[in-house]
Every structure is written in C-alpha cells, then in structure tokens.
Length: 302
Length: 221
Image (tube, rainbow over all chains, first blue to last red; front, side):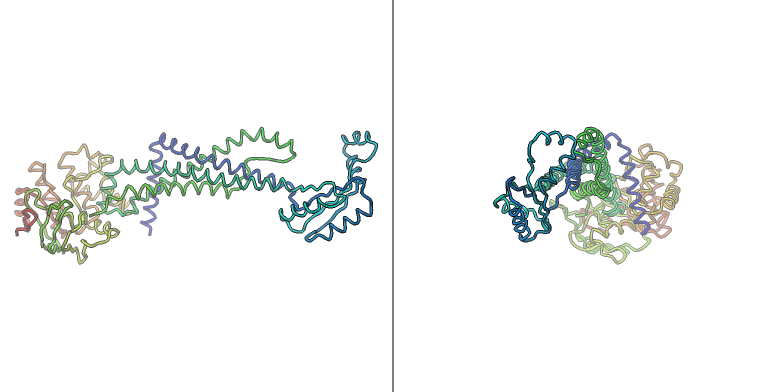
C-alpha cells in the first residue's frame, strides 16, 4: 500500500518536473486550453448574471386590468365580483383612479404635467394575483379578461421576465454546445502532447517494462500530466474570464446604474468555479487516457 | 527450477526459432547455451521473462507456467529475473546511478532503501566511483558491468544474460564471466547465451558449469 502511494507520489513529482522542464511548451499548451475554455466559461457566467438580474425583478403571477374611463361604480363592483369568481385567483386589489392620481402627484416631475390637464386621465384598475405561478394560465386568463365589457387594457407584467428566462434557456443550450465543441480542442491538445511524450520516451518505457514495471506504473505519469494540463488550462480560462470581466465591469457598472440594479459579472459561486476546473481536469485526463491506450499497446508479448 | 517442455517458437512469417526444445535447469546452476547466431539462443532466454511467448509447449519457472501467464502478472515475474540484454538497453539520458535505480523506482521501493541497494549493486560490479557519470562515457566493459548491476539490484533468483561478452576484449570478458561465477556461487541460477568459447572455458575452469548447444532451433546436449 505504501509502495502504491509512493508510486503515485513519484508519478506526480515526475509530472511536475516534466511540466517545469519545458516551460515554453507548457505555457503555450495551457494558454491554448485556457482560451478554448474561456469562451464557454465566460458565456456561462454572463448568462448566470443575466439570470441573477432577472430574478431580482418581480415575476409574481399577476396582471393589471385597466378599465374604461366612463365606467360606473356599479359596473366596477360587478367586475370585481366576476374577477373574484375566476378559478385560481388569490387576490383582487382595486386601485381607484383617484388614488393613482394622488400617487402620480407625489412624483415631482409629474405634478406639473398633471396640473396642466383639466381632468384625471388615469383609469380605475384592478391588480389580479393568481395562486399558482403558471405563465400559460396567466396568459389565458388575461386574454379572457381582455374581452370583457368596460375593460380597456390588460397588462401582464411578468411576461418579459419569462421571456428573459426563455432566452437564458436558449443561451444555456448554446453554451453547452460551445463547451462541447471546444472540449475537443482540449482533448486534442492533451492527446497530441502525450503522444509526443510517449514517442520521445519510447526507449525508457520499453526498458521500464522489461524491468518489471506494470502498465499502471507506466501510464500513471501520463494521466497525471493530462489532468494537470487540463487543470492549469481551466485555471487559465478562469483567469482570462476574470480579467475580461474586470475590464467590462467598469462600463457595465454605469450601464447597470441606469437601470437601478446591481449588475456584476464576477458572481459565479465557488461550486461553479470548482466544477469548471474539475471539468477541465477530467477532459485532460480523458485526452491522456485516449492517447495512452492508443499508443502504449505495442509493449505486450506476442 | 526452470523447465522447458517441448517448446516450439514460430515467429510471424513462419520462421521456426525453436523446435520442440526440452530442457530443465536446476536451482543454482550455471548454464551456458552456445550455438551460432540465429540458432535460437536469444529466443530461448526471452521466453523466461515472457518477452516472447511459446507457440507450443510450456515454460515453467518455480512451478509457474509462464508461457500462459496473463499480461498483468508478467511484471511481477520479471522482477525476479535479472536480465542482461544483448543490446544492454541502458538509458543515456540519465546517470549510471539512475540507470540502476530504475528497476527499484518502477516498483515503488523507498528512495532511501533504493539508493542503498543501487550503490551496493554498483559496488559489486566495481562502478561505485562512476555513479554520477553518464553511461555514454563508460567503456564497453563498464557499460556491460552497469547492465549487470541493474539486473541484480532487485536481488533476483535467476539471471539470464544474452551474449554478455560479445564485443569485449578478453580481459574485460573475463571480468564479466567472473561476476557471473560469483552470483552462481551464492546460489543464483545463471543462464548465459554465448558463442564465446573462451568465456565458457574460463568458467568451466573455475566452477561447475553445464553446456547445452542449440543448432537451428534444436537442442544438442
């Protein structure tokens, strides 16, 4: 058992030594992998922030019903009853045109505008809230109410939130496709690097095998090499994404202030960062495995 | 105890290197396998560490039929057989010391113990003073001694050597043979393939040896 651990430790050590002995090639390889992975990693964190921003905006299942201006009190009461009778309604809240006007007056820039008008331009309105957050039901109900008498306009506030969510969903598929494609770049880089190593170390491998090295002992350093290369590449990718975001952050902060929301790009949770690194290391390992199983076959006795 | 039973080895392409060879080697024996080049000496030795597998027949080492051994078990067999290759197979990208360390490094021996054992092996063949040298700077005889040090560092019970004295002056060849005699005298089974008649005579003059001759793949006792 201790011999086994020692073999692992020695394989790890020799891998580090190998990486350090060819610094230029190592840096180039790490950068190639880093750039390839930075694209999907960057797109992913953009999406993540978009989603985060959308989550801060209310996506409650409610719609507003604006009534015609000439509607009578009795008709309002009747409408309220009809709304309350709809299935799945949690709350119906009436907002009179007077209270809406009062609210508008509080707004400093609006006061003058309203004063210039000779009558209240605002309609009476209901805010209808549904019990379940189901976009389809919400849309159908809004459509139904839209057809009623005395109803001027029905507005579903959460519609755009759902549109953003749908866009994020599409974006996520795109990121996955991109990640899948660029993973091949990482696989190819490790595969090829390790193929070259096996070729240059052919003699050593042959002799080690003759002297009683197991296949595992011979393959182990290559696996470590692949995984380590992937890990370093993943680190480089995160480095690239973070420095790109650091630059972007300055302009985005201004843009986000206009929308009164805090929109920052470095909000990826540590678990996601760890899984990007783990993914890169796993890909490097897979490339190493492919390469080793293709190129180390010819050492068995016939 | 090593037992070759009706061993036939046919290489791809049809060349028959060994034809129904039967031979048993007792523990601690010093055996010379002589014959012209192409007679099958190397092939016979390669069957022991399963560098080649038999086409038919069997090779049994210490009760283990190595000819049908699965690939995963072969490394452990090889650790018990000290091999001196015809082309030596030294690694010129590392020092004399690291060459001898290699068999220990691949089995995960503690580096401290390994270093001790490597130095003991180098001392045995008289190369301790050259441990930091690159093998390329050694003379032919020294390179052969290095190959021997690497073969014995695992303290194997069996040593096989393929033409260990070829291309060496008589003096150097004599030193090499004396080393094999020393291993034989401490109980190691030694099998040497050679066409060097002087070497065989020299050994016979110093200790009990046995000679077998191969001719076109067939054994002549």
